[in-house]
Image (cartoon, rainbow, N blue to C red; front, top):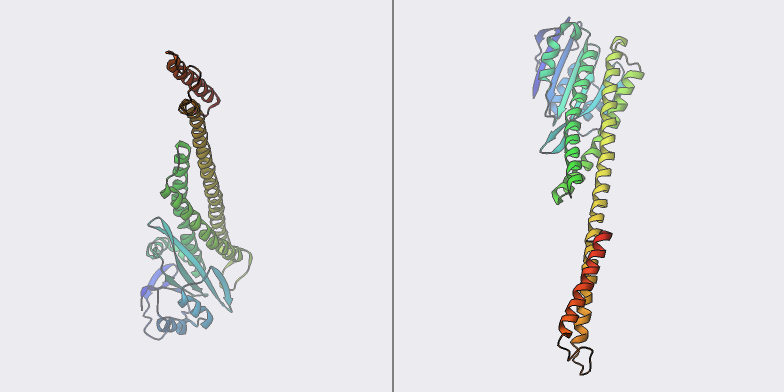
Length: 320
């Protein structure tokens, strides 16, 4: 069994290590905190038997592909939260399933790059808070997961701002366009996670559950506030990304329009000598100034004068 930690706590202090291979049950005092990482169905069944976990919740915990949700099974509570981390420029998601009872909490992680070891150490350093019980541990885990969203949002914001600066200075490259669409795709998926996470936190605040003390409600309101702020910032990022894509398209259209005007202007200028040279290249016997010794210079001068006038005109109108 992939046991990250299995500890019994009394008055906020770690008391005993728990041997999950031995028969046991729900502790009469204190609470147990069990941390598992990607357990098999058989391993999960052993923990479920020890703490009387509902089989439907156990099935969801083993599956590892659930959206954030919260369900009540009698005296127990089952939650699923989605973790997120930025890996190689993309958002990778994991899952943390949490079983909460009056005297135990079991966490089951799948694919999460952030373990709860550091969180456990922080809580153990403040036994007064840990003494509130497993419902406070639930708040700490959810808060830890939600706080992990903000570094991702900050990184994406910096990428978007850098692209906007490049967009104002010139034109985006093909790699920039690819990155923009990739970021927008990640942001849309991120919103699909934040929406259910916000609903989970809202239900913890607004509904009463038998294994959650009313004294911990302010902590869950803090989690809800964090999720809402993350969702608000991600929603703003989605709008900025869409705006950046639209702006880049407008800039590209403007650039193409400028090139088209320049080509049209030069075509008009070159059309004058082309037309005159074409006329004199027809080899007619009787043509004006054909046998005049200054005819060549007059024709070339006329072409230069007309072309110069057209160039000046197009320059004034901004076409060149």
